[in-house]
Length: 158
Image 1: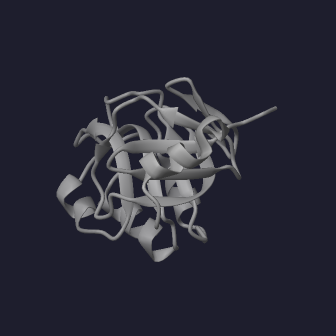
Image 2 (image 1 turned 135 degrees about the vertical axis):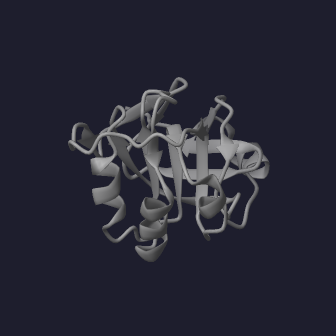
Image 3 (image 1 turned 90 degrees about the vertical axis):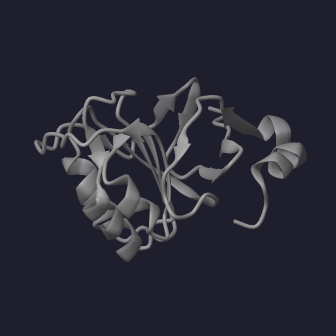
C-alpha cells in the first residue's frame, strides 16, 4: 500500500466509508489493500479455510463472524495458507488464535481480539455476499484499504 488511509480519505472523502470499529493489528503487515472477498460465518471457520486455500490474487478477505470472541476463525495454519495463496490481508469481525505466529507472517490481519478455542468445521455460512460490519458494507469486488489508522472501503452506491 503506497498511500495512507488518512491521505486517501482526504482525497476521496464521500466516495469512501470509514470503519469506526476499532480493530487490533495482529499480522506482520499493518498496511494492506486489495479487492474485497467475504465470508459470513459464526463460530465455524471451514469456509474461511476453503476460501484462503484458493488463489487470493492480492485480495482482502473480510470475515464477518458477527463480532463473536467465543472461538477463533483464523489460526496460524489458515493464515499461512493465505500467504502461500497470495492474499493481501484479512479483516476479521471476530477472533483469531496463534497471535505470535500470525504476527510473524507477511500478511495484514485486523481482528477484534483472540481466543485459543477452535471453531466448528461444519462449513456453515456464506461466501462472497455483502456483509455489514459497524454500519459499513463490504461488497465483493469493492476496494478496501487498511493501515494503523483504520479501514476504508469504496462506498456502495446501489
